[in-house]
Image 1: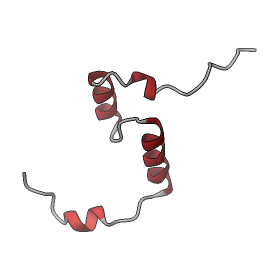
Image 2 (image 1 turned 90 degrees about the vertical axis):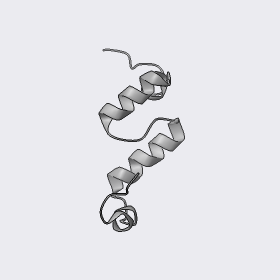
Image 3 (image 1 turned 45 degrees about the horizontal axis):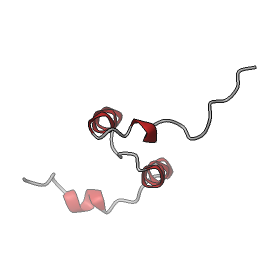
Length: 62
């Protein structure tokens, strides 16, 4: 499988704050990391739906 053009440059770029947060969330929750379509597909395939939902009980409605 061929690598993308300028692959080394791409993987050595620092992450943005949003990307860092997404990676941390993924690692801490065991959630698949990637674009939303891929995450949903993999979560369904591997039965990881619970990792995509917020933790804890739902908030009470007023």
